[in-house]
Image (cartoon, rainbow, N blue to C red):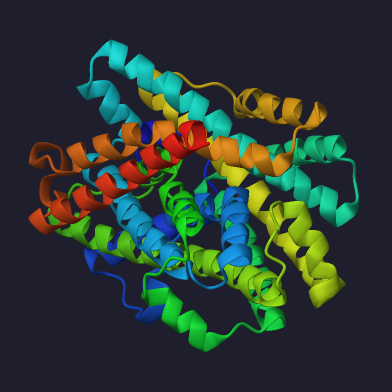
Length: 438
């Protein structure tokens, strides 16, 4: 077992990378003697980077609106969304392990040239739409926390995300550590928020598992939460994160490696799911619980928290938004690099990619468009790209000649097909409502 030759020559690795790879090799071969969590640590990381997409500023907008308007009613939608996303991310990680290629590379090798070019162009638009939501979210976080004008906050966001992305040249561990730390900041922030807002735990337990709606508007909002949960760019990214990180072609070791990656996904996506649930709980217990149901923007949520829970709560909210925006914007840029490399066999310096994808965001900020409305529009654009990520993922993971011992079981195929159909139909419904629903 070894890292891919092309990867090891293209970038230097830190000693932390080498130690992780050495420990992973010993564990997969059965030579590692330690027990407990230490066996899992070398394999943790890829799913935490991917999970950032599920706690981005777009999630802030939908979860806060859902909790403010309908209390705990739509909590089950957050739970269902997370379970679906977890299954898709498991398949994405498995694709990289089983084939040694990422999803974009497999599309290039198996589809016609016009199809590949079309998919690449669409995914570039998706990458820009993704960065639009995440970049603006980070800028709003700086704006709320430091009182900076939004345009200055935008340039500060550009500088901060470029620094984070620069860590990639030193290996996978430093970048994974920073991204995971930012996810930790979001987690701690919402843990504190949950303690401050004192939710009704009986209602929480009930609505987490019992599907229920409160009128047509709640159905539409549930569709927005569920339909926009799975981000197409992170499906491509996760397969790239696992394809060359720890490589083995031994069937037994591949199964062991996949089992560890399943644990990685379960932990990372579990944390992301709890964060999303905490967002809705905060809005439900704080805003809905005080009959403040018209919280339509992130800025309104921040300003309303101050008189209801105190300045500490509003500051923690801004910190979590900032961490979310910085981490997810960095991950979005990484996804753009994967898409271009996979579809076209071309790469550009990360700072150029950062510059290109953030230009639309800076334009939106400079001309003064509403940030929350822009977040919603970006989610609609993402809906267009979803079928072109999830359908190829299913097609490739069902092929024995590609996946070998990691090919999907029949029940996995049935389950993922149902999940994919539901998510795609909900996205189509969301698009219809956006453009024709009045």
